[in-house]
Image (cartoon, rainbow, N blue to C red; front, side):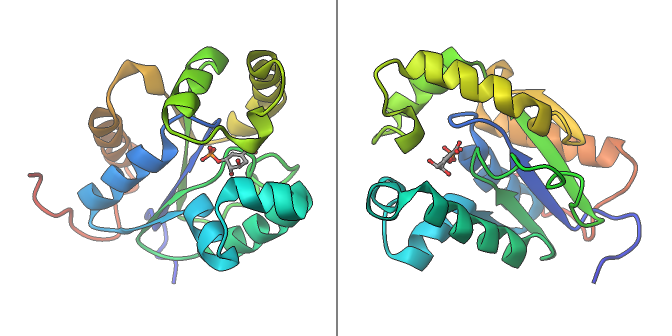
Amino acid sequence: MESGGRFERVLLVGFMGSGKTRVGRLLSKRLGWAFVDFDEEISKRTGLPIPAIFSEHGEGFFRQVEDQVGLDFLRASRVVLASGGGWPVRPGRMEGLARGTFSVWLKVTAEEALRRAAAEGPIRPLLQVSDPLERARCLLAEREPFYRKAQAAIDSSTGGPDELAERIVKMMYEMGLGLSGPLPPHK
Ligand code: S3P
């Protein structure tokens, strides 16, 4: 149940490599809430790592499973959700978020996104092209209008994941809407 005026969930959006998973996990611990990473959930449901889903079944299939994951979790309570970089990119998606959802855009440049994505392991399927930087720049330009619809934006290069998570908690209080339960003590 939504309780009027209170945040029930946080949705992190942003480009690949913007830190959604790391920040989301830390934020969920800080809030004492559950954490769901869309990509992890998609891998769990399909039994395949993300690159294999793209290569074996194509992006269309990946997006279908991703849609379902969104539908299944975007009304859950006391949860932090890290969406994949492509999830918000559809007309009406960000506008249709349920009441009680605090949406936060983690901003990153194409250069930094690529550097982090390369450091994290297997390159994201959408960046497996001859000029990944150009591709990242184009994708980011296409997607920014969707990410921009989030209620808040944080430049992910301005702090480590812990600091970014803490800033989000602070914003939730500053927005005066409160949280749906007390915070566990900060360790
Ligand atoms: C994608 C981003 C990836 C993953 C898939 C597609 C995208 O998630 O969902 O490779 O379209 O930007 P991250 O944003 O967590 O890297």
